[in-house]
Amino acid sequence: MEKVDILLATYNGEKYLQEQIESILNQTYTNFRLLISDDGSTDRTLDIVDEYVKKDDRIVTFKQKNNMGVVRNFEFLMQKVTSKYFMFSDQDDIWKKDKIEKSVKKIEEGFGLVYSDLEVVDNNLEVMYKSYWALKGFDKKVRKYNNFESLYLNNYITGCTIISKKEYIEKVLPIPKSTGYILHDYWLPIIVSQKAKLGYIDEPLIKYRQHKNNKIGSQKKSDSLRSLDEIRNLFLEVKLQHFKAFIENEGKFDEVHKNLNRKALAYFEHLEQVKNFNFRNWTLFFKLYKYENFSYMMQNFAILNLPGIARILFKVKGKLNGK
Image (cartoon, rainbow, N blue to C red):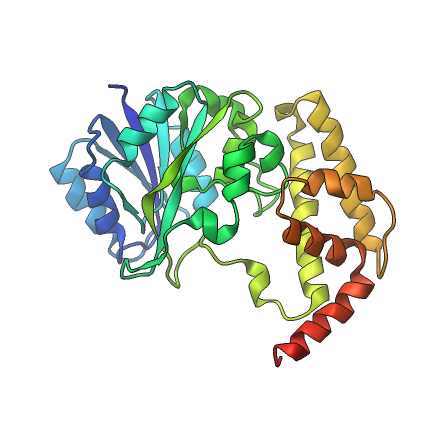
């Protein structure tokens, strides 16, 4: 039974942390270390952690002097991994009792990284959606593609479901610092998928809790935007930072994808100057978006390439919805 390092990043998580730790300590797979790094909590988080340290010698704690943010905190924890396998954990979910057991079994089939579906619950653990993949429309990407190409434009792998191997950590780190749009749970799969196969477990192994304090939840930032131009600017900002970070870290990409990174950045830089209509590089657009579902692809096509028409449609839709 291989040892697994579980990386739990905490910050002001007193409300749900105890339930999460209990769900980890009561796993059917017992050969693990729970590495907890606290990012400067000001509530009772550290008191809760310290109580568990007294009870279970599998827990190792780190206390950060300055708040680093969730990505840097997980990056710190990745550098502390000594076991063959490691997993990420959020501070507010519930792990199903056989999550580690099923994850280890799957990765030992020859994969470099494995992930699972999630059950979306509210703050009281009442089920909101039985499948996060179905909710987000990720089913096809997971079951049909599940590779670097399908991850390239948008991530569909949730960090708290991941198990991977220590051998990839030095190939992954550092995580890009120039953007807040590339998180640990995207950077790890995008790099590992160039070197090894990805595996998935087609069932929820986590109760994925949604509440007002979630740092990374199931809601989209664009949902709160009121105008087409605000949405378009957000889409462009994300993609520009996305591909700039890829180019800044191009040593982690093979030659084919280094070239694609440059073409993609040039394309989105051009779109930034477009006011109403773009008729250039539609072939590249459909190459980049080919793994997205049809409605998402066409929505993005209109917003990015034909904003003059998209504005009219957006206003009509708003009037029909009474906005």
